[in-house]
Image (tube, rainbow, N blue to C red; front, side, top):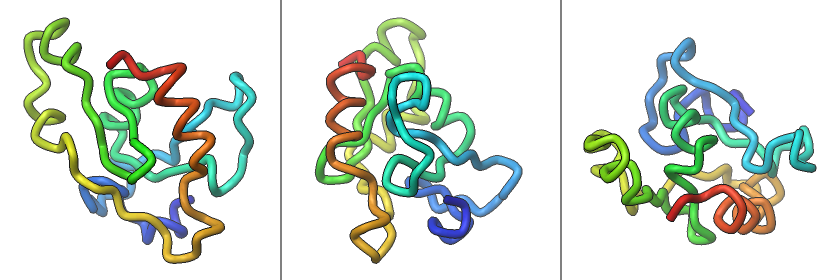
Length: 112
């Protein structure tokens, strides 16, 4: 996943490798696979917010942030400013985030 995403966060394009994580879209524990279409390279804090359901990626590859970030934490401007941004996806369609995995995350994890 790291090389597939050019060693950059898919959302912010950050290149500081120790600050990046290969994230599962659908967690392995929830039936997700260890496969390229189920992975995305994200900055570690964004990965945490994504895993916690406070953010997701829609079928058009846009980053969507839940209002709950603001409501629950009275914060979240760092993530709110990224709301609606398109993520970078690999040029090979077979390696892009799986639409079914994104739907699963939107329906099962996202706290929208």
